Amino acid sequence: MKGMSLSVFSGRHTLIDRGERIVTVRDFTPAYIATAASGALDEKMEKAYAMLKKCRLCARCCEVDRTKGQKGFCGTGASALVSSYGPHFGEESPLVGNGGSGTVFLTSCNLLCVFCQNDDISHLKEGVEMGPEDIADIMWGLQRRRCHNINFVTPSHQMPFLLEAVALAAKKGLSVPIVWNCGGYESIEALQILEGVIDIYMPDFKFYRNDSADRYCSASDYPEVARRAVAEMHRQVGDLVMDDSGIARRGLLVRHLVMPGDVCGTEEIMKWLAEDISPATYVNVMAQYRPCCKASQYPEIAGRITAAEYDKALFWAKKHGLRLDQGKNLKGAIRFLR
Ligand code: SF4
Image (cartoon, rainbow, N blue to C red):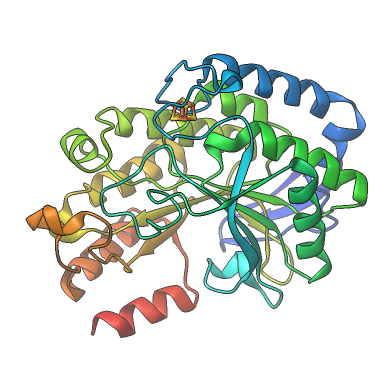
């Protein structure tokens, strides 16, 4: 039993073998079920909706009253906007399994990066208004289609509506974990409301360099904000754990998009994750950077990355002992760049 530890969450036992990096969990119950049953989810919803009145749902802290039609940096008002939804098989391997990840793409974004890979959804705001009941129906439908989780993509600026949807979906019998797939520019106050609701946090960690964060996302404090946010997420859910089939059940999964010329500070991010969060942090080092959106106006990021740049990023992740996503994304990235 050397190197093994027994931990408990959701009232069930979990066997974790840190030495072999086999991390499994059986008899998983998503956190939101107990939170809804205790009435705490309703209180969280109230707090979240109150935040719309002087909006500080993300680290921009625009302090606009979205309930009165005012709009801040994200341009989103007092109701949910959804761009698309469905089973997704291109996400990280522990989210996909056989049934896919049940993605719900939310319209707009609180970061609006100049190189956004989904700019039709974020900058152009293509989507339709939906009530929390509609989103709960979508979630229930994704579970019925055997998706392994509900994956809210770019959710931070729409958090109150999504919490209400979770409460309604839980009443219908939703029982898969919820993935909070966000940009990393998060409000700690909002994250604390999500404690006991979200089982899997999947933030980006985009930049360790303030000048790059300012230039490409108009958020010079992104590195500090992301460090605080990732630490809070890890405090809530810990390292990523999977079930016997390798499907993620709970924990932190960090994404990092490698960009040309190391404008991100990739090694610093990997080092910080290993030393300040956990060496068992699960990381997807992504190679799919393309000069989308307004990137052509920035010569240093107006092309793709090279195979050597991607190799170096992988080397840094491995050097710092992180758990790398080894699924088809990694294999596809290596094939694509060679
Ligand atoms: S969610 Fe939107 S309005 Fe609210 S603080 Fe963030 S960018 Fe501003």
